[in-house]
Length: 592
Image: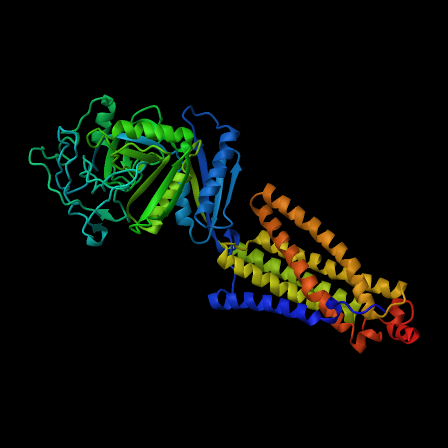
């Protein structure tokens, strides 16, 4: 008989390796106190949003544009860190299913569905109905912007105001500006700096310039006066001037979702509803942005947004910044318009070549990331309106989950009974393998749920239940090879275990490889529930390989040394009557 191999003589080490793996995952779960996986939309509830396309000519959109919109919206939703969100077409509509917490952030992203456009600011004023706005100074004839006073008295939250930081000179290729105050008809005083400064709004911190208004500049009228007094209105279409005077940017929708023609001037509101703008034709469109990323300035530590342009976009951005940099305020501002509202309108103080720009100014990590996502995922080929927003209850899903778990438990009990009746004592190895596979699967799902954003849904559970058959199939192949070796050859159980393993593992690996390839292909080609099922199948296929190699085989090597199995006890499943020939014990005596 051949000498025992290392895998035959030291199976305990392999079992210890598996035990260490289980302990590490168990410790991770215990330290995070995350003993239950996160659930998807069908189990935890959530929101279903239906977006209907709106075209200028009223015709049905092309399938190509819908496919592109689905891809971009899926990127937006996934960019929020929400897992298991489903974005799919339904006729000419797009249906978005967002599970559990985080749906408010995702809803805000999918609501801003217009294409991003960069437009020169032609005129700006405070919101029409905003009370007690402090008068501000008009631009001086020399082209330099005078400073604006502090924000209105209506903002009574001192924590939201901070002094504008002193800026240092920067290398060429950066946007140079000073922070804007609560929206006024003018930009803040230009003091030089290294970055754009984002307009304060909402949860974003506001900055208050300290310079006094020019004595010679006429004060801007209050709401009952003309908001365009003292501003240059040349080149602006007369109809827009009247619309600008009448628009109410404090209204709830503030014009959000309006279809803005890139080839026409428009009137728009700021995203916080505190300012109104007249904007020129689009100079750069969102399709020319290659990427946007939130980060911190290595020198100051403040949060910034880095924007990168494609080659054509870089040229267009350089041209517009070069053209407006010498103009008086507010015409030296470049507004970024998304879904019909101005999300940021920094002052440009020098031309910006090179295809890269930086936006900064009183950002937090949340607001910087939000702006980067809006810039990065803002270039949709279509406009959409929310035709329905439905909150989904988890009650039905919980009932289905209960039914699925019951059916899975029944299936597992039937498999266990079959193993014990057919394989007897050998079936205990199979039952133990199923138990270990169940524990490893649960720990794996729980760990990736709380650390990788995975959410357990009904399709995943179906895939996990079906995997019982995959795991059982692997060690049944191994058991049958052992029985064949004992029946057909003059081998002891110990030698049969090793020879059978060398032959069975090839079959197991091929079968699992085919299953895994099918799961991968199905995952990438399918969406929604089918993709979730495919993910669960692929995961459990990998776990099956781990269990068979690290548990079933080494445990079988250990039990082969026990007299109960090696001597062919009637309850071992390897007795002479069941084998149809002499027992392993008799074979050992004959070989001796």
